[in-house]
Each structure stands twice: as structure tokens, then as C-alpha cells.
Image (cartoon, rainbow, N blue to C red; front, side, top):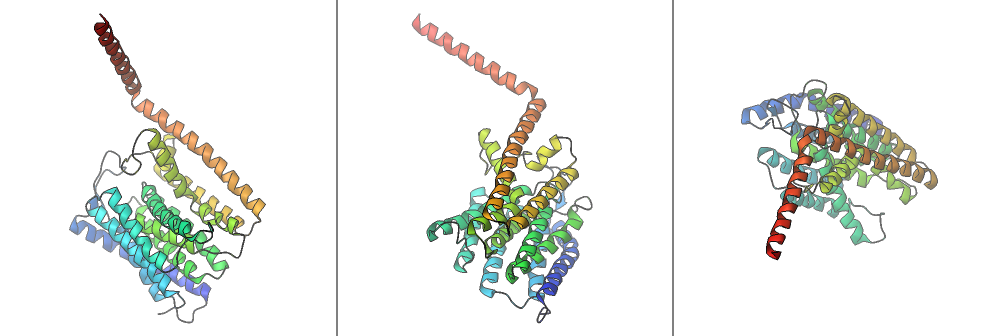
Length: 374
């Protein structure tokens, strides 16, 4: 491995550069393969693209991350690295199968839960959330599966999932490097480099390739594992806030979509539509690219808040967390109002038709009752 004997900082830089370069080289190759085998995302009413777009971008990201880590590191906790990459490979292959032929959402959840098994066996688990190991184990599974799906949901506009993942992994890199956590910092450097390399084909130009479910599930899984592995010699109650802030954007988007669909009596696991954070920003008059940049900016602001919280006392940390929660609650209500108004404007007759049908049914019921009485 070329990274033998390199200082930690140079090793991180080499991993980042290698992942970026490998993705820039590998993504066009993945695009050609996708076109040759017909693995493309077809246009649909709920989608933004109007022509078929090749998938397999996620495979290019996955290969670049693994290759960069193997080339430029020599200090890994190999059992834990192997466990993380094994789980990441399983969710990537699950996503690839779903890209090829849509799988049941419940089958995908089972596969994602199985991907947490290597993590648990290698000791990559939440430990300080509660004093009960069994509860922490369940929380680990829920966290990994939840965040994996959060990035799958977030991948709804060009450059959005890769951009947010790049920002989040960059903050994990800074936090881990500052506290000497080589495994976390190296993996975060590889992830950041691969995501930035992919953006060259997915955002800086009109999207020439999508990462697909293979890519979005991979990003979510790796970031979930990084969040679990990140450790500080600090107040545990404060430490838990750091990854929640860094990953605040995908968590907020998933919460928004889930609550909104439940309020509309839809199954959040199976329903689909243009009701995500980014879509709602476009309803406020932003272009798709502007919406992606605003969401990315929000991710950066939350990352800066996480940096401050990582060294803050309990009072300051909780004050920041409470402020973020209040802003998030306001945004949830406001964005739901925006979405409902847009739906009412798009289908102005829906409410009137429903009301008319209800009144007709009520009148018919009264007539039936009156007939029986007579």
C-alpha cells in the first residue's frame, strides 16, 4: 500500500485525492456500461428528467472508495473496516438489484437490517445512548436502517444526495482528524472525494448519470457507520448531538416526508411523489439548482454548529440544539402549508368534488332512512 509510513494528514489527503480521481475516471466507464446493458432510469410523471439517464453511478462511487482506502492506508482496525465495507457492499448490491428491477420496500428493509449484522459483530454500535446494551443494539439497527433510507429519499434532484454526503463526510473528517480517529477520518476522506468526483457528472453539468439506489443506500449506510464510530472525550449527552447536527438535513427531509404522507393517509414506505424538502423549495420560486444549493448550505451551517457543539459545554450545546429544533419545527409547518397550497392550486376542483360527493351521500342516506320510516 502506498500509504505505508505517511503522516496521518498526508494519508487523508491522498485518500481524498485518490477517491476523487478514481470516481472522475470510473464514472464515464460506468455510464457506458449502463447504456450497454440498458440500466437506465426512465422518465416518469413524478421524476424531473425527460430523457433516459444511465444508472451505475453508485457502483463507481463504491469502487473508488474501496480502492482509495486499500491504496493509501496502513493503520486500520481491519475487523471494523471489513465489517463496514461488508455491510456497505450488501446495501449497494441491494440497491443495484432495485435499480435493475424494483424490489419490495420491505425486502429492502430486511436487507438493510442484515447489513447491520457485520457492524454489530465487529463492535460498531451505539454504546452511550442508554445504560442498557440491548436497547443500544436496537437503536443501532434503527439508526443505520433509518439513515440509509433517509439518503435514498434525499436522492431526488441532481447533485443533492452527493452534495449533502460530501459536506457531511467533510465535517466528519475534520472532527475525526482533530481527535486522532484514523479509521473514521480515512473513510470520511474517501467518501468526500468520491462524492465530489461524482458531482462532476451529476450536478456541474446536466446530469449525465445517476447514482441510483445503489449509490444513495451506500452513502447513507457509510455515514451512519461513521456517525456511530465518531467518539469524543467529552460529555456523552453532548457528544450524541454532533452526528445528529451533521446529518440534520437528511433527518429533517425524512421526517418532513413521513409526517406529511401520514397526514395524507399514505404509507411513507410505498408512496412516492414530489413532496420532499427540495421539491417544496421549488414551490417557493427557486430553481432546482438553487434548491439544491440552499439545502447544501443548510447542511454546511449544521456542520458548523456540530463543530461548535463538539467542544461546548452542556448548556451551550443544548441551547444550540433547542434552537435548531425550533427552527426545524417552524420549517416543517411552513413547508407543509406551502405544499398543501400548491396541491390545492394544482387540483382546484378536488376539494369541491369531495364536498359534493359527501353531501350527495349524506342526502342519499337521509332519503333511505326516511323511506324506511315511512
